[in-house]
Amino acid sequence: MVVSGDTLIIGLGAVGSAALYQASKLGARCIGIDRFAPPHDQGSSHGDTRITRQAIGEGKVFVPLVLRSNEIWEEIEAATRRSLMVRCGCLVLASANTPGYHHGSSSFVQDTIDAACEFGISHEVLSADQLARRYPQFHLRGNEIGYFEPGAGFLRPEACIEAQLQLARKAGAQIFTDEIVLDIKQNQGEVEVRTDKTTYAARKVIVTAGAWIPKLLGDDYARFFKIYRQTLCWFRLAQNQERYTPQQFPVFIWITGNRPRDMMYGFPQIDTNGGIKMATEQYEAMVDPDAVPRDVDPSEIAALYTEYIAPRFPEVSGECLRCATCLYTVTPDAKFIIDNFRDSHNVVFASACSGHGFKHSAAIGEALVQLALGIAPTVDLSPFGLGRFSR
Image 1: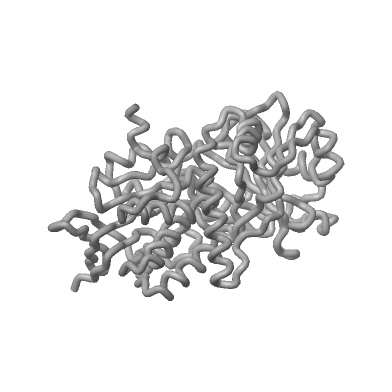
Image 2: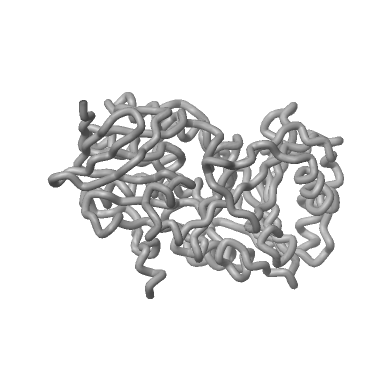
């Protein structure tokens, strides 16, 4: 028996849940498939919090995506009466002589400032003295420059995915979980999607499979993606917990050096017993998404704390309350790839990650549906086409 629909979405993480919600809003007969049961902790869309910021140091082409995403989050919050986005502010800082090359930017703080100025995003540029007075939680060297954006903050990724899937179901979408897609092929004007359980047919297919994108799309596409395992740790606060609430402590990105892993980030304490979440990034060892070491070794925790946290946050203890792993799907220029699959008019795909995708996911999901259905896009996706690599 073949299950048929108008639009089928493969992968229901950040972007896929957004696409399913947006397609169902348009009245299409929608099908969503995921190899796990979203929201889950096997991909890139978990961990309690994800940073959202409007001025994007990775490039000005991203700003319209996050601005539109914020509108969608607010729409979903109103529809579900759930808190999805907390605007506690975001601080981006670096030493003046360490601009850092991160996420495709050669000077992350300055590029963030430039984006804010161009798009009229409310912000402050803070000297080291101003930073020290306002944020005594940070132990500074004294030569830092900071960018503060009051309208930034964090998203609750599991709640965002759950809310969009809930609204999609309410609008009539069919969702199939714990089902692995084996093949995608054209069949007499439709797209046939075969899984380990059944076969589906749809007029339009949107592939948003995250770290599994290379395996689904094949070798011609896999060369554009590298999958990296990341670790997330929640450390106990040794004292002054009241200084780390969302009312007192912003999300932050701290460029600590010029190596790829020298991009430290963290969040306020959102649970008084849950510790404060902090992490860096690693781009040394690639992984197979089906064989990821999920346990975090004590040596990894100790290295993070000793090198990055202890010298900069004296009130954060070395006791790790919990940890997790997630996956980055990284392209050669750290930007997204959003395009048609094999020049097909009825299969589109997105690899919206490279370590900074969740904040944009609501708008990307909407834009993918518009691209698949031939609707004028709300945001311009042309900067993310695959053809840029051949140019």
